[in-house]
Image (cartoon, rainbow, N blue to C red; front, side, top):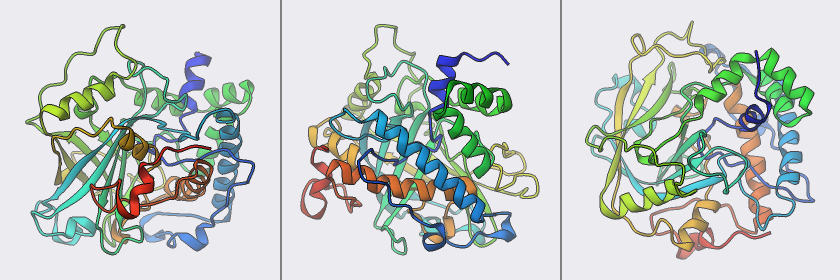
Length: 396
């Protein structure tokens, strides 16, 4: 396999396709990260559903965390504040509503927020982003992993009071499990020889990474995927995704080479100043758990045997504050975590468990370095009252 080192190195340094979308990793500081033990913070693995986790996996997650910490210390040593190490460039955070109608789901799968009566509407925030760790200066026209993170507010029974759905333009994840994920980090952040070895020994991982990079004409015209599995009730697992509503206009042509480096923000701001937008939210219950394994999120789930079922519609109203100074600060300061979830729809698998340990430690690290508290928004009114600090400028 012939590798293009510069392009592959940029791609491999996407610590999360996680994200996806908006993955709340952290920040450099003279102080070490506070390691969080999964034994203290996560539920026991659901072995009956194929989930596994042990001391070896815990050590793999700790090694990944150390690698990211060292990388961040170098990346942001001379910056004015610390950005996320993946999905650092946001196009804006927008007000939205998550309107539930899970009547198409079998009764035993109507769990978590999907158990709410049809017509229930949760206020939400959505962060759209680019995945490249090269930061906020990367032009939007460049191919990249695109992210959409959705935070539902006012969720009773969630420790955070929120339900976060993290998605990106990768249909499936690129790493199999904790060991594979650690090898990726050694390759992405090690020497050139380490990178070449990873490319030779993991050609399909590289292929999946490259396939997730797309160009887009607008954040509102892209499909986004969970990539990794989640619980759906006591006996099932799922993936989820969103698609622009059928009523959305067809995607526009990509701009030319002279496009603004921030044209995706400009498109988002300009569109929502004139009209509302929407996405349909689907879950994909896993009907073939013996072949669509929880501990191998690289596997493509067959939509014929495990069909997508629409359970909600996300509506994004007309709004004008997206690019205000306060809202841009908010979009830097807000945290997203797949473990901000009701128990019946929690993340599944070693990749998600590693993400829990890494996200939480580095999120605390980033916020501490930027002198901004970790706060969960309670409503669309975020710059007053108890959450006003979310709108202040981050600074080291």
